[in-house]
Length: 330
Figure (cartoon, rainbow, N blue to C red):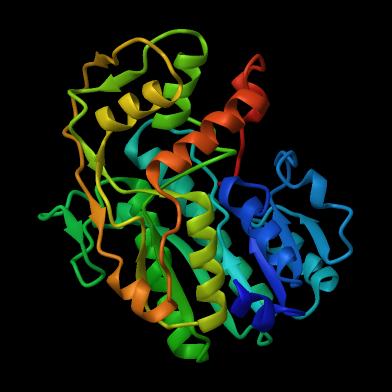
């Protein structure tokens, strides 16, 4: 990304969720572009993903509970003026009821977002927020466009949409361009948690077949981690004040993903099916706007991306309890 290296060199970029799956890779990419990075991570977050970067003098690590206004204001003295904000931090609620999840999402994600914005002051010249296609809910058509009506069906999607609206209003009032990126399903090396691909790989590593929910016909847009990072850096550079879908532009069923992993893993088995009660969501992204506005073109094929994740999983995860890799930020 020659353009990125030229235009972001020397810029001071605050990255929230910097120790997470996407945030850590973004931090690494920004440092490769010779940016100065302020990595804001929540207290208690694991540092495994950015541990090798901590010795870089261009990286400034800030550990802080962003829900604590006073603590965040105190940290402002350490990070100084910020040119650009990449807001990727997200705390996963532990409640099981919808109302419990909603209250935690507001407390852990919505309010902290505005705390960060307030703490930035007037030096910031651009904001990029990592939203999600979850804001579309269960869309009426398979391929969604940015002007489709959002209708979230989860607390996660509702909170992402609420943050979008608050940041959009902030941008209008402050004249700071706010770019909202609605990520599809992001996969790749370093992926953990209760997600399809890590669960499939965990079973395969034990010689067991992947467990597919329902009949496996649910269609989703899977986009590789490095492509998402590319899109995020382009958004920080070009600062378009608009919403953009970030995906691969292709749809794959969960059954197809499971069978591809089996093939690439060189295993001789078929997926097994696990009943699910709720209706599946089918969604892919129209990414024509991101191509036009950002110059974003996904570079990683599904086969290549899955193979890279398999190689990483075999190298870094096999034989170690997944609990060691639990994360609080994504």
